[in-house]
Length: 256
Image (cartoon, rainbow, N blue to C red; front, side, top):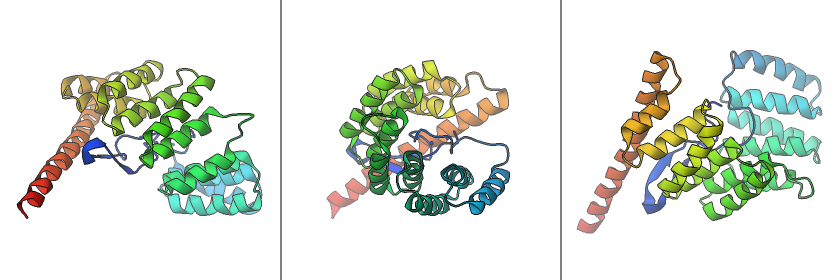
């Protein structure tokens, strides 16, 4: 979405309900998730550049990004880990490595690496936001929001940070707060598919399906609008099925 929607994992909502983050996602603050015309062409060219000089940090980052864009997350981790070992003090490389780890589901390791990439004397709001997204994936929502607050002090009303913060509230089932925050993000980046989807889901989870559908299809051609609203309904249906399954499981536990 993560952009294609990136940083995809399943996280818990309060009350043991689950939300699939292949549908609603947090941003790791880079461009690996963005849809490109031909990711495989980019992959081939970046592979050649990296193999020509494995100690070129920019080449490693470009290759890692191309691997992630083509869905090869484990390979991206391996490439960037190799480069980070060879060039241990490159902050940009560490940041890319940390994002790749998060993309691959290695959340605690991702947070540790992103912490090494962060320079308190020269803070980067993108890294702070990525750290928050990882903490949310570790169900450490209060800590995550401290990182988003720090990021917003540097980049006020930055849409990607607000989107992450809104998702954080969604994950803790604070839906009105999620909607309010995501509307701020939407006001800044209405064309961003992740922001749009996250806001629509937050609205739809509160039972306002018509409003959610309007958000999903605003500004889109008719065929894309139909596909987007169908996609939203799938997300909400899966969430409702997960809730129904949980109720059924509780009933079974009580009968034992």
